[in-house]
Length: 181
Image 1 (cartoon, one colour):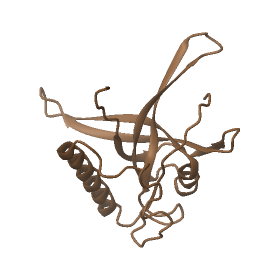
Image 2 (cartoon, rainbow, N blue to C red):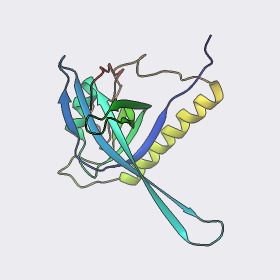
Image 3 (tube, rainbow, N blue to C red):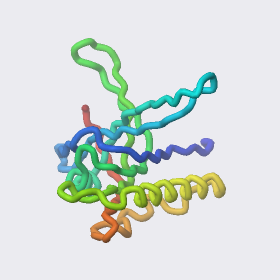
Image 4 (cartoon, rainbow, N blue to C red):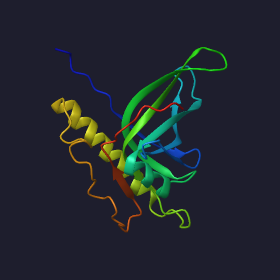
């Protein structure tokens, strides 16, 4: 019997480019986009504040992919829950094996307003998203398992809900197909 493992990612950041929506030969939607996250820290040897930016490749599948392409745009703040996945392929030009690590999106919360509306209350939304992520992480750490996953509940309670706080959420079980990038 295999030992138990855990692969879950929570990121909160801004889109680095507009989402790109494509379809597989079988008609499954795939949406790819980038998210940048920042962190600041003070070095132990000085009082200088340093900053680091990480860029993440995100892939959403199925209905969630279509929602991401409709709701997200470059610069929009987004909270992503997903899992790490590494894709490998042979580069045709060099013949070398190439790897790309990406986050397969299982849930997405778009923060702020639609593209044509000024972001209002973004700080409260970010705080709520962080609290939700910390609550999930603490729950997993305490119990050793998730109470519910996207596979257990493929339709989010907030899906299609146009609430007044300008937060849009979506989740999916994600049926991936093998496709070359």
